Length: 91
Image 1 (cartoon, one colour):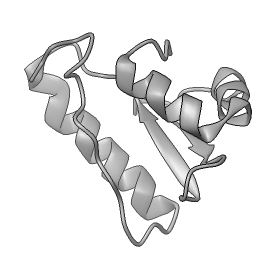
Image 2 (image 1 turned 90 degrees about the vertical axis):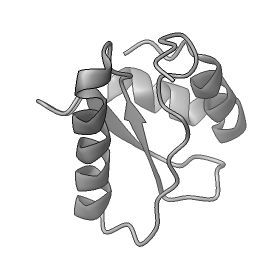
Image 3 (image 1 turned 180 degrees about the vertical axis):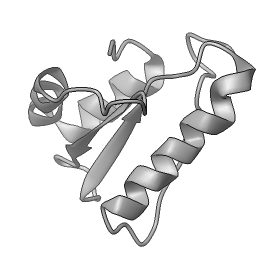
Image 4 (image 1 turned 120 degrees about the vertical axis):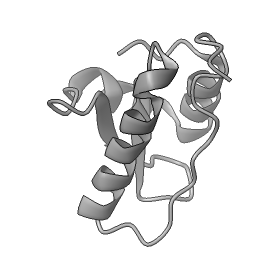
């Protein structure tokens, strides 16, 4: 997963270098196109890093996987920034 988009860079900058290292060493969750890391310096326990879909057709599936992962982690709240608005220009 390449964290090259402007939103990814902003999150990593705020979260600190530990999150970047964790992203590099954590595998993508099988069949979900995402990975989960701890929140680092952010005010959250976890961050679900999504791989932006390459088409609008897979957008809903990608978001559903993020919600499934958050539920599995026991999250009581979730923030979802715009996905695919940077490099992918889906929005």
